[in-house]
Image (cartoon, rainbow, N blue to C red; front, side):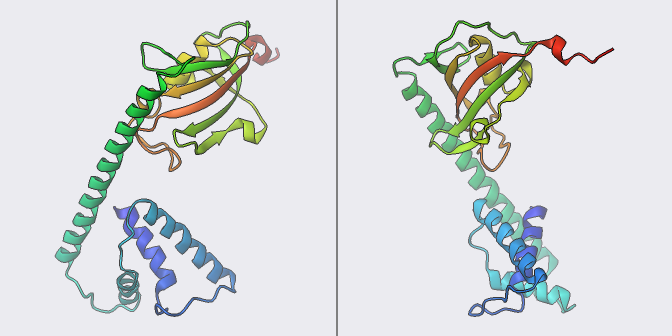
Length: 235
């Protein structure tokens, strides 16, 4: 919550001194930077559901603080208000997480019925798009892969394919769904993975692009198993 309040304060720096009918000038570097701070913080607050804050009250608080005026609310009133916002934010987040978990479960139940989709004992779902007969990696191997990760609504959150550059990674150093899937694949194969949240990031949100309890969908191509001796330092 302290971060939220700091964000509110930064947004208000742009609002302070401007009435609701007047737009700030955006000519000097300082003005442009101020606008950028306000824009970024405003997006962050809106993303977290704090879209009913009173911008004029925020600006008033900053003006009173900068002007060393007597604050219009007592500290205990502010503590009570902050506690309300904190509780509301937690309730909203809990509701969103519960909704995401239910939606993910429904998606996987429906997806498991499709032809070609296999479900492992762990709950991982996958289908082989392009079959190959190459070697299968072990948990101790390092592999080279191409991938694209999406949410179940199709929104891409990461893609080595779009970047045009495959990545090397240790099989045992990725999310559990990948650890299992890579050891099921053969070099040269392309697969589509449907990873339950408990085999990905669970109730954690690793980034704003991946909400908590998200089922992750990956297009994955296993390009090669790296030769350990090739990475050994020269004597």
